[in-house]
Image 1 (cartoon, rainbow, N blue to C red):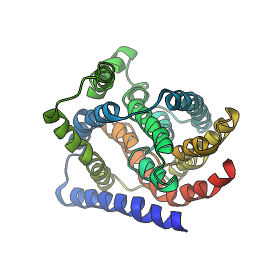
Image 2: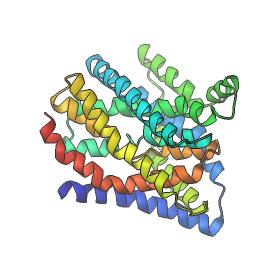
Image 3: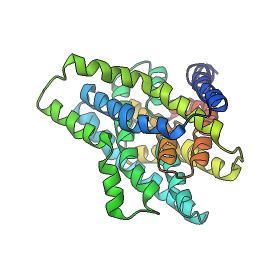
Length: 307
């Protein structure tokens, strides 16, 4: 009950309040959602990616272990999602919408505080979550962009679209600066930190605006199927991969918990920016966040038995 209450108070209620603010603003002023998503894609997101890569300290052993786990886990989740997509006979944009809703998850503003809570701010457990968060920041700007455009654009056009995203250049730039041990000047880091601090609030308000602008014909079957993949199938697959590789103790628990969080805001941002089932994507993000109160609490309750 303690975890349930904490998740509700520290994660769900604050998120819902920000989303509600976005819905209210949209209903009153009829704002342009696409302008907001462009700001997130071309300004806030690259600042977030660069800052995290520039300042995160991770040992080689942790990185190697997490990357091995993640490659197998992500491939398995992709396979299961693809089977579901084909069985449901989804076409066009629905395919990528379902894929992205299952594959991209809220590893930052939901996953990091959750890791702190469950593992009592253990540095090792937190380092695992940080690696997962970095991967989840990179994937939407590469595979995610490809996924939402694959059914309507040629490969060259998709590549051109990806190369226009600033986040693609923020990644190698941050890595290069770390390798060369170059410190970013303070006048540059201060505005970057300001953007990072505002990213979550801005993204949640944008989600609320999209919810406020859409037609509320709730697609129950599709939404519940997506939520099942994200909140139940994903942690179950993480458990299997952890057992297969013999990752025990704190490392295994942290990896399983990292896979149990709800659908990422990036899924909605991709859908709105590239006009790919934005209503469904918004409903999935909102509903998975609400349902995660129960599913994440259940995963936490099982963690002590996974040593």
